[in-house]
Image 1 (cartoon, rainbow over the protein chains, first blue to last red):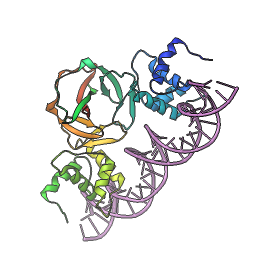
Image 2 (image 1 turned 60 degrees about the vertical axis):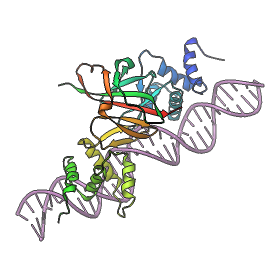
Image 3 (image 1 turned 45 degrees about the horizontal axis):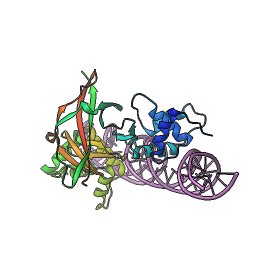
Image 4 (image 1 turned 90 degrees about the vertical axis):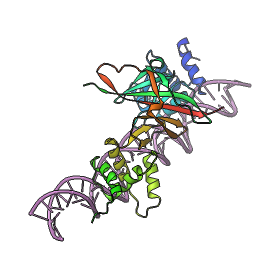
Length: 140
Length: 140
DNA sequence: ACATACTTTAGAATAATTATAAAGTAGTTA
DNA sequence: TAACTACTTTATAATTATTCTAAAGTATGT
């Protein structure tokens, strides 16, 4: 007996293309992450807390880590780091940049930043990507 | 009895301006960090291991963390992050950028990158700094 | 419906970092 | 210089983020 409406398909596809069977837990995580208009920035701990908050049967920490890691490896999530030893993930996987405003992260669309000059890659290497972080502080 | 030649002064000044008394341990750490030609990238663990390697009397982990943290807060070190939940520090505090080549970090001088277009800061905010990370991969 | 390989989970293990509190030291003062 | 006080060092415990483990459960092909 399959419970699957057309809306779920997309989430399930993301899981399958990450090499993951679409179990209930994973489908719910995938929905939670991708069924939204705006891009979503999160840590695994935040994701776990916000999803488990209302659930009677909690999804385990390991499942959150496994699922997020697989989605990231498959390219459905983008990982980035702040200076607090925690991994952040972004549902916006298109190349883009970030504002950091004391712990808060805001996406900057790729075309908002263009370069006049970029260095050459060292010999034997090539550029995989370029990421810009603009740190903000309060005016005045 | 003071053992202090003019060379040490500089290291001691960095400590004092970080609000730290120049104890033996701290002076040695400060020397180790700043008494070099090229800029130095390190994690606290790496710093501890390389300094303690040859010492009979080891400097404690807490002292490394405290000292590095104070030097960073005072602006004598720059902190940055890779995607491995570890803090990296850079003795080059001038605004500059980085190549990341699987875990290896290479400085890029500030003037090697210039922008054609940068976004405005959100209202009430201003730009504190802009950092570029260029990720490398092997050719072919 | 079976078999099998993949999953979930609680809990242990690990790694980086921070906190604690007792013993030691720098810098000031008398 | 002796004494004092506040700051330091250190070993160790605690904390946080993450990964590992192994037993019990489930998806999927036949």
